[in-house]
Length: 479
Image (cartoon, rainbow, N blue to C red; front, side, top):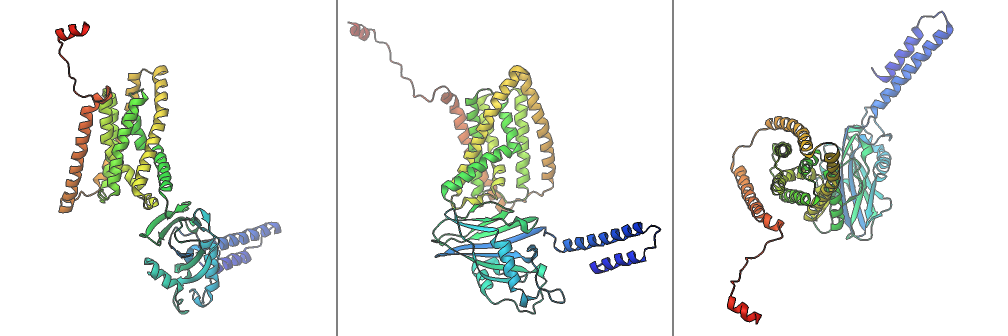
């Protein structure tokens, strides 16, 4: 039922209501019907301006000379509180839509997109061009096509276009000092919808285009970060990730439980960091399979690694040499888990990919040492005043093993739902590459393991030459 019909029905019921014995009761009854009709009107009006569930915004940023151009495309349905002219059939009246489109561009886009040059915010943009576009328009595939489209002739007034299906295309210009400066952007566009994704393509005057996929309000995004800016961002990311990753924290906890000395644990944790650094770099180089089954496989192996380390603690296998070797081996697996978390973040590395990866590992190492600094004293106090060390190790490891068993089972069930790849030539070639890499890493680990006792006892020494005793020379020397 439409809104006018609903209101008319409420009024008719009000008039047709039988006369009640008490006039005050009849008056209250009429007021109740009127309020109900008003609530229906408000609810219907709110449903016509609901917040969109999913919004995708496309943007191009291109500095050129003393001008920075910002091309933006956003759905018109996300521009609420703007009255767009409609024709009698409910279609957008394109002949009268220029002023409302400009208002929507300034209120919903220009106000919420901040652009910075060398950390200095640029003044408000100049609105150069604005137009409505069909939802099927493909002009924003490239910057040049989008620029020609926005600055070109508008749609014909008789084009059939519903307002809530139209796209708003806008060209902003900012005055800048030089196109060789470093630029940043803060797109605070989360109010456009429930889930907002902003795809920003930055085209520097020299170099390849960089694409960013930002969710909600991502904060300040450096489009061309310097190496120290990218490194600092990834150090913080690595530190936060190790504290937020339950899997990695449980594995680290299993490594720490049987030991009380901080120095040997640093060696174990460093081996873990060095191992996942290798797989992180390999993942960034494109050596990781892009199959759907790979991520569930790694998650299952990570849960199995936690279970294995807990069982080692229960069995009493507590050699430092064995522990760092296991940390290195399982660190290779955990590195793939880190790479999954970095897939959406490497876009902020700019041209400093290797620096950012190393900085991320530094942040992870700092986070692990921070966790060690908390766990070692806490476990020392626990085993000294609450429970005996051996019994406490078994109890804590059994609790972790119980959790890891459930994780392994659940993740294995998810992994079984994926179809394993057929042994085609591409898969065999990838397996051979990973086999060669595994053999090389195994050889490095073996060499370190063989020489570890001599390193631990004071370093490698050369062969000892024992001089034979010569009694005659000794007597002459004494004389």
